[in-house]
Image (tube, rainbow, N blue to C red):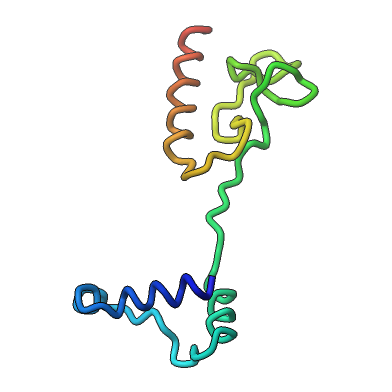
Length: 112
């Protein structure tokens, strides 16, 4: 991580970017690798998107909803959101969530 931060700062120091980037990404205290490591610990975060708590699958033993988004063992209840993803997507969850909503709405129209 420290190597990556130092490299990014080198790129920002180029004449092309220096004239365009207004924010100073450095802190006055960062001089050593340990300083940069602490900086990384302080500013690093996650983009964790909680999903998959009501996974879709064919069997109630290892999933909550079936392929038509109906809750196993219950009648008249569906889950139509990102909690049905079998696994967490590798990217942002917005587009797949929209898709689930659209597909779920179509299923409701078909089945009701």
